[in-house]
Image 1: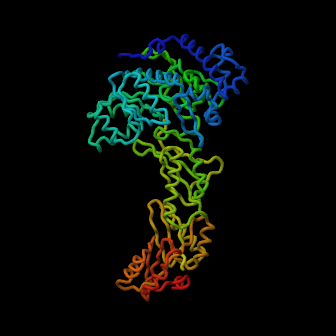
Image 2: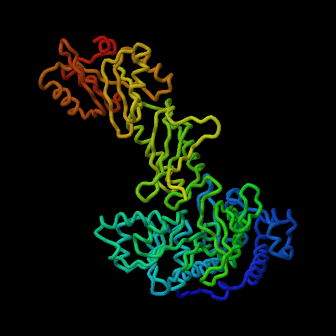
Image 3: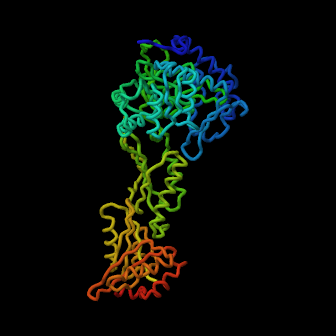
Length: 436
Length: 144
């Protein structure tokens, strides 16, 4: 098998070299971090007052873990290390409640993130001459733009199709001979079920590869995609807090995901105790971003569950691999690639006077796609006796939820007292999708 | 004006029965009913012997219900009468949200229940009377 590299020297560097790079970059990151309100408060309490206090990679452990809650509480500028005149891009993502989280990138940060993305693309064998149809959302979500920049740098022809409008997507694939897709696995499966409807079959397309990410999926899902389309599907891992996709990517061996250790320091911890777990054991992924100086973020708890492979990969890359994402350590739901916290839904519902306090969130499969159903009860005292009022109320709940979580749920309005009442911990979320 | 009891019911087995069960317990007599279907839910609309009492009993059980003003119109059971009534309302641009009718044996007395849009801001009552129809008040309606 032909192995292509974007930066062979660092991708195949020995462990000692990678660790030396990590130490040097960590010191530089601590220097940047000491310019942020958050780390100015936090680092001195653990005896870190200058980059010189980081003497070895073991000193990483001194740095406190950071969480999404920290990002939220310090929104919008608590993690910003530079003047905003140095920032060339921001991205935001939904927080656990109404307050979002934000990342800032300087020109140098964007360049570094783009380079890592390019490396990921090349690892799959994609190269100049390939046509990438980028079907992730553009805009505030990192998935679309970061892949776009990386693919341009490699020299692929990029079709910035973004999500949705299946008919047009298929037309674009045909008209421009798309060879590579960047897409959520659920949408890719959904498209297959619509090909016939649009008078197309797989043989009319030129697809060779798909980068599938933004939502956890099983090996069976990957195999199904590969069989249905006759392509290779590569698992992609990233999160906006770490600059988006390209944190870890599968190489041509599709043997789990190389995490680029010169750009991110990987730790796997026990989510309860915070202690490191041995390689091979499942735990929570904790990442330190070594390439984003406008907004340092170190030892960030991703809440994603995975384990580390230490066995060598035949591709020659020395960066350790992480397993596919096996689930979450919090209650975040991933619905058609969009991250949704039940608390966001609760916050919206509770502000609407015509609904009661009891609610349930159902997630199920409708064909290949995820369907979010929010079940609420009508608050009896607010009922005026008109059907029109109910129709309006359902539309209002749907619109307000869509504004908060960006996806449109199905609203089920129930009679008061019909939804189950729980003694003790309420079971508000019922996820009927197949477990990984 | 007559009162009709409107109850929000979701579309699943047993929900209507839960309502009739509660009404039976308090001795409410259902003179007429209709269901406005909206897919996954509906409104059950009832003409009952004592609407206030029925409303309070259901509300006490936590039901989402409301009393609505409706026109209860006596429409003789013979050809052309409903058309005559509706023509009078249409000519005066009065909108009907929902309606149901029933005929009481043995004297073939027809009753038409009309829910009128913005009823208090229309002269629907006069229009109906001027067209030659009798409007039944609460007592007349429930004692039919």
